[in-house]
Length: 249
Image (cartoon, rainbow, N blue to C red; front, side, top):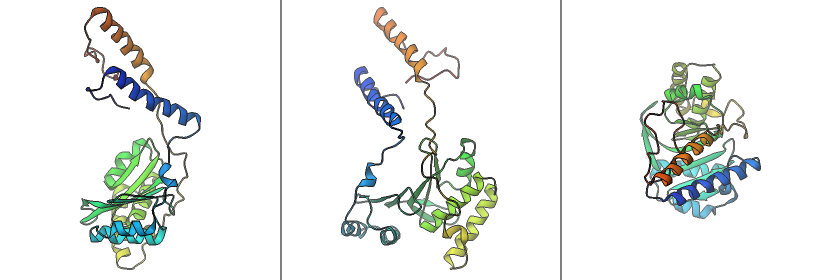
């Protein structure tokens, strides 16, 4: 939760934050940590096929593969298709946009697939070191792979799992990933690219962290009262505050 833009008045800042806080409390009370309205939607197959017709060839080809394998998507825009709970994936997104990536060889990323997976915070840097297109989300407890094919995403997931579980170093995982990439594309045995070699969790991986706002609210409320009594505003952050104290909200 970040500070509100400066152009918003105090009442709107509080109201904006308050709405999100109230929603968070309600969801927590209901035993939920996220909402999934998109999963209940359905896009007609003909509409999805129409959308991808104008996409660049690499993206159009993979989008067609996903449509054939997983059926009509749950959501779609003119540049994105979304599936929820498809196969081993919590979420799959194909986009008409692409991102250039030079490892293990030059290509573009446009297919993102996600599972519930808790990467220990201490290992986030190793995941990024292995592959910058493997993305760990601490709050949601997710691991996403973004590449140009489902096989590449499966391969990335398997390598991250082996790094996290201590089976391989980053260097070993990168070498194995490169070897399996070549083998898979040549039609040779490439077990790490063919299927997930572990069973993804189904929830329970989120890390919602702990609130630190209570003390900050008391401090800022006292400052606000002083503003009113003295007739002039005090800076939100006291520059003399020792490093490590809670930042204002």
